[in-house]
Structures are given as structure tokens and as C-alpha cells.
Length: 136
Image (cartoon, rainbow, N blue to C red):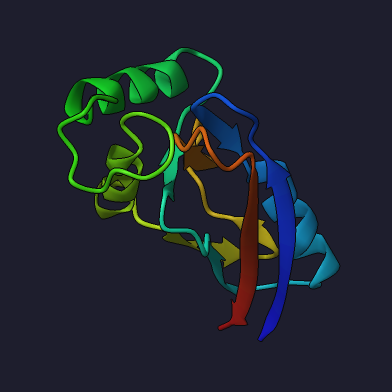
């Protein structure tokens, strides 16, 4: 298995960060052919999503998460910035992993699909993402 980890600076606002180009570069570096790309985020307050970006879906996702998981005082997990407990619930809805088929060294994504890191944690502006390629 070929694997590497990158650092992503997400800043101090909730963000949907497109990892697709990073994943493509990883696959080129690994000289991937057919197999499976596994993406892993080793954090308790972020997740991964495969969705369209740049046409409003990324902002719609953040809006939906704010509606579903408001940043307020209802959360039992209370350390950090106000409402931070909701960030710890996020990975139950957007898991910290994703697997994508790779055919001929290229991710078999749909036309508008991107692999994205979703980070709503205002207290941690730096994330790690691990890419692993499992040949098939």
C-alpha cells in the first residue's frame, strides 16, 4: 500500500475544502493503475464529503450543517469556542473517511463530483489528510 499525509490549512471559518487536485497528484506520485483510493482525516471534528463544488453546493452543505447542528449552547461537549460541541457530532454525519475507485490511475468520480474536507471547527485551523492507494 502506498500512503502519504498532507497538511491542509482551513482557517478560522467553516469550510468545504476541495481535495481533488491533491488526490490526483497523490495518484500520479503513486503510479496508480486500478485500485482504491482511501482518504482519511484523523480528527474528531471534521469529515469528508463527495459533492459538487463551486456552484453553490459547498455553501449549501455548510448552511444545512448550521441548520442541523446549530452553533449554540445546547451541546454537552463544552470546551473551546461557543457551540464547539456540534463540531464533535459532525463526523457521525460526514465520516472521516472516503473510498473512491481508481481506474487507469484516475478516480472514477462523476462529472461534477469532488472529494472534499469539511471542517466546521473554528478552533483548529490546520488539518491532516491521509491518502492511501490500495492496488486491485
